[in-house]
Image (tube, rainbow, N blue to C red; front, side, top):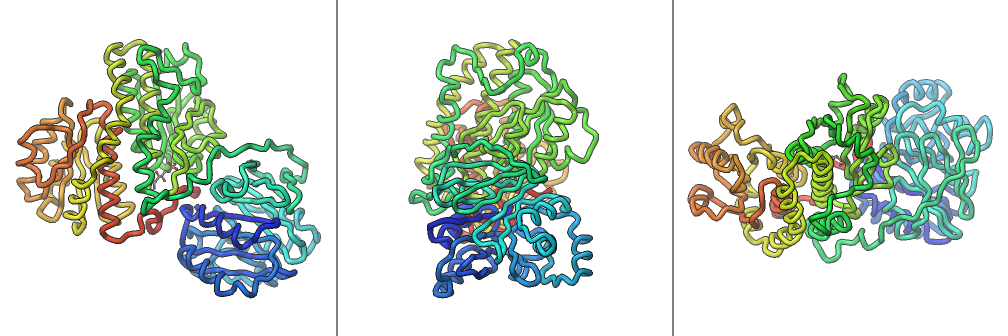
Length: 615
Ligand code: M6R
């Protein structure tokens, strides 16, 4: 969370930084700010709320920026100190000569702040970041060397940080440092960049150096130097970013979320491509770096993830247990890290994350590694910190996902789990071969089924219109689609702020049924052919008897459904085991259209950020 961009070079500094911040806005949007080096001065601009406010501020003050040569910018997702102008970054030291932007949390900032106040520093904000500004300035006053001052300062910081620092007296030099928060350097010709994530620089350069923890980058327009915390030069590999700038465009869609929902069929084809072209051949995910003999004996898997990725993990559990007969535990990373787990060297631990930067999951993965488990990471960001921790890495190849609400990365995670489960089942040899073959055959058809849903969304839009005034929803399902119910409800909560809860349909009568009346619609996911179809139907009838309005999401042709349910959203025929790959799509659309009718900020919902890099 929070986004950082630093630039020095020949282009218009303000525009480059602003563009970078625009491409990072999904990381936070409580406030934004920029510090520009211009004709020997450091000029600071900050605004509260979204980036558009900073744009207006910069436009109104444009005439005072004459010849900018370097700058640093920030968009904030508030952790310490409320979203306010005084807490917005960049922060400065008492004399205003040193500026800093920061992503992360400094855990010992209070004691550092106390010491600095005693030394006469004048604090203005409630942020932990301001402490860094005073600390580096204090060190600089002693050594008169900005690089050394940053090195000495970060040695005193506890917690997580990615920082960029500039000083009025050190022309066109930007220093970046990181620990437990992502940071990279973009290499140009006569220009260089520092950023917290690749979208910030992709429009300008694809050449990137990823900083590791405790490394410091010193950049000028013509030079990049990376050192460790002691000042020793570190030789780093220059990597070429795989993304194209076009991925950051809405391509005519009103929102990124809608565009990303529509991309799902192609994303799935992309995931399957090269992995599943001959249904008679075994699946071979060569990304899984475990010996076949070890996989054959494997009897314990733990999957750790958060939010939407946790829901993908629940589907993963269901299919791995069903197809490969391996026992799977799924746990929220934030729970896993604060208890005594039974993880050991015979456990395969799977970490699932769209961003690869989620702090809770990173901590959980580190703990699993300490216990000598083999760690497999399923992520959409093979360039992320989590990916770097992986023993085995499955990139889901969904392309950059800009909308805060995850959609295409979820379906890509699901498909990766299907491929993994089939591979494990084939290696174990304990699943009926023709059953596996049917699943493979149907997997290939999933993109077409999704396209069928996307080609006519009028039923879903109508349903959204009808139900957009309700304040509470219940989503029910049983078995493998319980994850879909949870995910559908999460999507609705995230972008429309409507209270929606997913329940195992059988649990309704054990408590939640007490809430039901005509103000609480119940959405049921019904896939015929599955063993729980009839049961969910009766659970829905129970809800109807309590006057709840009923919505069915179903592939059933049963005429009875039309009489029981108030609204029926039809989806193509699909087997129960593969149904989560398509049942999620109408629920994403339902959440989208409800939020859209309510005029909500679909791509950047309040209080959220795309990657949650704090615990
Ligand atoms: O990047 P990750 O998959 O690790 O993120 C986990 C959650 O923060 C994320 O899925 C969140 O729930 C999304 N906003 C879902 O739309």
